[in-house]
Structures are given as C-alpha cells and as structure tokens.
Length: 307
Image (cartoon, rainbow, N blue to C red; front, side, top):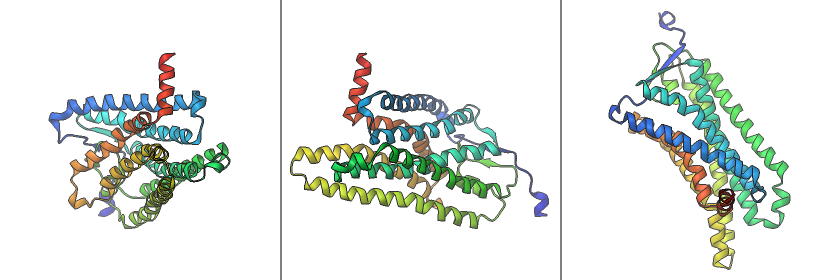
C-alpha cells in the first residue's frame, strides 16, 4: 500500500510569501533593487582588484572570491524568487530544486572556509609581517581557494546524492521561496534519520571548525595589537580586521538563526526573514562593508571616478 501511494515527484510547488499579500509590491521592489546593487557592487570589487596594481595582495584576492560566492547566491536564488512572488507561488522541477539548493549550499560552505582563510591571512600580516610575503605567496593563495571550492562542491555533492536516494510522495509543496535542506527532508516519505546524522557529521565540523579557527587567529591578533606601544598602530590593526569580523558576525549570525533555533520556537515567517537576510541582504552589504571601511578601495574608486 505504501508503494502504491508513492509517486515519482517531478515538480515542486513553492508558496513564497503568500502569507504577506499586502507586502507583495515591497518584496518585489526589494528583490529587484537589492540584487542589482549586489551584482554591481561585487562585480565592481572584482574589477577594481583585477585592474589596480595597488590592490594586488592576498587580502583583496580573497575578497574577490567572497564576491564570486555572493554572486553565486544571488543568481541561484533571486530570479526564481521573483517569479514565485509575481505569481503568488511557483512551480519548479525537482531536479532544478536540487540544483538550486546545491549551488546555494556550496556557496555557504565555501564562505565558511574562505572566512577562516582570510583570518589566517590577517594573522600572518599582523603577527608575522616580516615573513608574510614569502608565506602568503600567490601560489599558496590560489591553492587555498581551490581547496575551499573543491571541499564545498564535494561535501554538498554527498548531501545531494543522499537526498536523491530518498522517496518523495506527491503533491510536493514547500512553504518557502527557495529549495532548502530542511523543507526537502520534511517532504520525504523515507526515514531521514540516517541522512540527518550524515549531514550532522559533515556540516557541524566543517561549519564550526572554521569559526574556531577564526577565533584562535583573532586571539593572537588581539594579543599582538595590545603589545603595540603606539595607539595609532593598534587602532590600525583593529581597523584592518574590522571589515572581516563584521562579515563573519553577519554570516554566522544569520545562519545560526536559521539552523540552530529549534523548530518549535521558530515560525515559517521567522525562517523566511532570516533566509532573506543571508540570501539577499548579506551578499549586498558584504562589498559595502569592505568598500566603506577600506582606504585602498576608496582610493581606487576615486581614481576611476576622476578618470
């Protein structure tokens, strides 16, 4: 009987923001303006670093990779979300749903690793400045970025393969504006205990370990800043790291709000708000944080503006 009731799922229905009918125009406006600013800001960062010799350093190379990750989030989520909001819901194929989740998850995991690499870069620049150029050379930078991308794509491929092996019973309706991990598991007819354990084994170490690494590096950075006798020198150290720390707090804060708050204490509305923050707002403000607090990028922008 169980086998008879199970159907081959080909389409998934996304409800979007149907519980906010009065704010439809506002959501559409935000999802048009914010992505435009996101794409423009991140492409500007990539172009500035690529075209200015003063920005040819490991820190800015890693910043371009952060921009690539933000662009991947925006392009994988926003176009379909606009369709869902315009038509008060939307349908996408099951394979397209998995592809959307895969690229979104890859960008998240990649950012975990990249933020820890950026913390390591700041640690070397501040705590070991004499050997910084030799240690953080261009070859090592490229290798670190490649490792981060390969790890993210490989880990999420394991998760996707596990999801594909589950059985889903139609009709499939997700009360969300994109395909995410938890809503997909909730729609499965199969026992998801083992895949949840597998995801826990994969994700917890690879999300919390980078955070621990970041904290350890910044403990050393703070100690080095305290030992600096001049006030201007220590303030320069903190201003150099403030942009990175701000991005870390925003990134981890929004994801912890989504995945760490118990389901019983979190409504679908709260989940959608946090999801909007890290899929739409965070990719937009990341280049702003680095641009507004970085003198080198300000000078590069002013030079281009004058030209």
